[in-house]
Image (cartoon, rainbow, N blue to C red; front, top):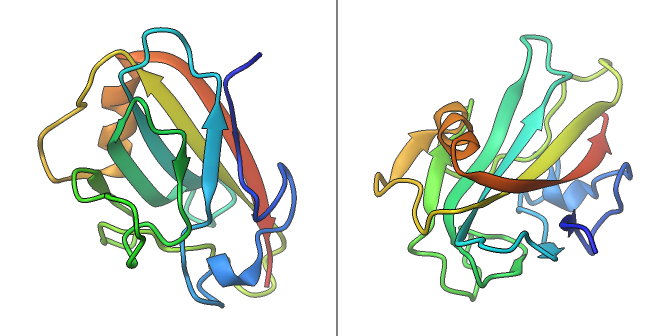
Length: 156
């Protein structure tokens, strides 16, 4: 099998439900993955919108996700019931260390949100509690064993 990322909330290429956007409850969607590469010790997750008027816009980043984990519940960082306190939280392009859901400009068409999960050969990418998402991904590339991606779409 191949390393894969999916969500019970939407299919690859499907519309992201409003609940997970800035127009709804702004909760992170539930995510699950399977078949990470052998030797995986941790994961990094980022969400990017390449359709933003200013170029790639980063909405969310998490790092130091334990290697034995295979899912993130809905609403990580918003009262999720699983232990997430050891997660590194990336500072998104809104300037916040949390999930900010899709919020494309009205009338600008459909935007495509890429949820990228990297399997890493290190237990911790950094001990810093907050890093800019772009820095997280650049650091992850040096330790990447594999990558899985899920794309969701949203428009206003």
